[in-house]
Length: 214
Image (cartoon, rainbow, N blue to C red):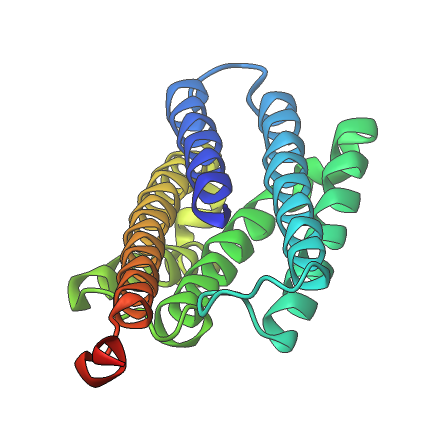
């Protein structure tokens, strides 16, 4: 199920976010950041690609869920996953190339992550209705990214790392809440389907009185 994959993604992002917060003051900070950032891109990208492949296999088998992603969302998912995977591998192989631009990369991650969650909440998982307070989380991500882009904070690497770590924790929490909402929705849909099937079976099993008299 997509909800299970999303939960694992949220766990990975949460761990990476905490690691960034803890490692922000180390001497080997930049190299560590590049390494963690590479993993951060690779792991969720691979998980999302596996989710997309599984969805495709389910559609071929004729199974469809109201929560399945549409064509546009699937295209965005594939593009972002392939791009994230390539960027993550490049960061692991050539960390020195990425060190000077880490600040902008992290700011971009936060802004794009916020936009992504806005889309998930507003459109991607319709007809699921998410609680209104959940929109605060992507708004916080976009705000953090904007602060890094347009303020003097970008000259303070430890501060940027700290903000990015906090942002990833927020991203993980948002992903987890969305996954739990999706899981709850799917359970309700499955229960409703079983109820309808049971009612239909009961109706079919009833023999009309006039027919029984015959």
